[in-house]
Amino acid sequence: LHEHITGNLNVVENKTMHICTNIFRTLPPSDNPDFDPEEDEPTLEASWPHIQLVYEFLLRFLENPDFQPSIAKRHIDQKFVLQLLELFDSEDPRERDFLKTILHRIYGKFLGLRAFIRKQINNIFLRFIYETEHFNAIMSIINIHDYLVHVVCLSFCTVICLMRSCCFSVCSIINGFALPLKAEHKQFLMKVLIPLHTAKGLALFHAQLAYCVVQFLEKDPTLTEPVIRGLLKFWPKTCSQKEVMFLGEIEEILDVIEPTQFKKIQEPLFKQISKCVANPHFQVAERALYFWNNEYILSLIEENIDKVLPIMFGSLYRISKEHWNPTIVALVYNVLKTLMEMNCTLFDELTSSYKAERQREKKKEQERDELWKKLDELRLSSAALVQNNSHGLPSVQNNNNNNNNNNSSNNNDNQDTRAEAAAVPTDNKVPDAGVAASESTPCAK
Image (cartoon, rainbow, N blue to C red; front, side, top):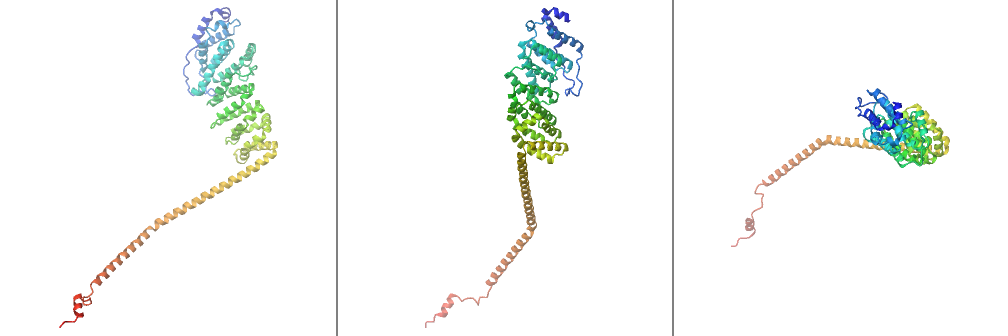
């Protein structure tokens, strides 16, 4: 096959048809929807012995010294690249390795396809972030893009040596990135790589993702502030494992940050670190406290101790008294000692103000407790009064009835008295007016 390829580059159309017919296919649905690459065995391609030969044929075809992209571009076009990218969703890691190498070769030789390849890789990331969260080769694609965004600035020989020696590892040191960064690359960083931190399966590709982010910041330090704020925006709230990964990435960023950029992000960053130190999950607190073991980070903190110490002091002092884990308490004591040595005067002032604030809080708590106690007493007295009134109601009613009975008997006595007065004899009555007149007037004779 190699000899045939070497001597017959004029049959490109037949070769590409042969390749497309054999490798481009619809991938079957996964047998295990909850497939975990770290725990489960991948489903291997049943026809791999045949497909492997075709991939090797395509790879030899692209690596041929006499290969002419100007002729092959009529057949290795955008449609070909799209079909190739769709195959990255294969569960067979052997196929994904071949695809990664082939895509590198196509990107290096076909200059007209570079922008299209980057755009389609962005689309894969966006679909993974906002739609499916399923793509078997997401880690491979991240590795590829880490290579693609730098490869335009490397000589072809350097690229080939880099790929062969490092086997496309994410740890490859890629030099020669063109400055200033293109707007396309900045947009990819902020719109794709940073939101990619929200993926549920972040642990599978976080190392590669963090490497890409740090590479961007090394090339353009002005991106530090938006990157840090983006990570703080997507900071995990309920997953301690992801929080530990975020802290690790933050430390990697602080290792390459410039002092001028550190001043811009120190306040929001250390507010989050303060929350992590106070986290009841000891791994999160421990990872945050390990920042003080980094000499460069310590130097940045010392230069800005007047800003950092007031943010961190309250959490550190409280945790030194209250945290359940003795290891965390010991680490906090070491951190407090280090901060005190940096600025003893400020440390003493913060200690005094913290204790005074605690006294005020205790006083407020005491006043609040007393107020609640008074309210409880008032409630109990009101309840007792209501209860007494409810028990005394029948006697009041009896008294009212007795009074009513007495009043009715008095009324009856008055009526009897009036009746007796009406029954007095008539001889005691006053004489009639006519009789009186006759007795008083003498008779005329």
